[in-house]
Image (cartoon, rainbow, N blue to C red):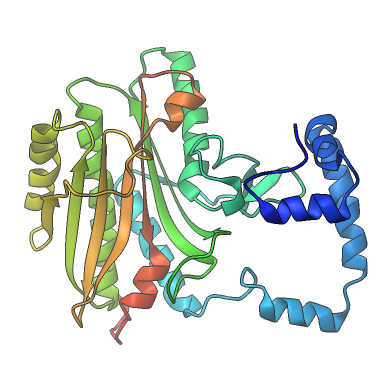
Length: 332
């Protein structure tokens, strides 16, 4: 392995100017994860020993990862509680996730560049997408079901409200490095005729719509909600998606609009089979994306079983709280 990286000029400069020859290769290839952890812990222990109170305050003020949310904590807590209340109604098990997950949780399963994560020196990374962690737990639980019955179709429904941290810089105002998300995962097994897929889609979209309905009851100013579904199978399952997802949801949620989005570009290559987006309109007519989801092959890969299925989705609680400002109402 070469010490120089053609794709990262900043790393190239560091290796040329400040490091011993072969250092990067030695760290990556010759040290075990535990030994590398030991080394880095000592490096940062010594660096922390040089931090002064004044320097600490300056770092706190300048570091975008350490700034608190600008939103009211009480409002976010109300949405968090609302989310868990509605999840229980739909049979989802809520989990309180750890702030960290194993190193590679995103890059190994979701093929997201590791530079977009906040990696720790203890061979972990800060959770940047709760659905990835829920997928790991879904795989553990599905594996136990399959051990008891190799043909088990019992579905695993997990959810979490979690403050995630993203390392990449987002364009535009109001996009902080950390924010609250409601994440859902439904894991199961292929049932034929796209049956698992349509049932899971209708269920998860229904959960998100139920949360948005509750947010309205809390006073958040959502004037309209729109659901867009994209068939990623080149039309093979369009009829099933229309009949068992869009039409079914339209009957259950009058006032919400449902349609196919055949022009969607984002998510192709990330999602498999079908994906969806939930958009909402403010009282002033501004349209915003609040939710997104789709099928992935993550549990199929984790369990080495192509018949395993997984639907993931997320609803932006932080965006909901910040964009659809709550007016004063009596709490139910």
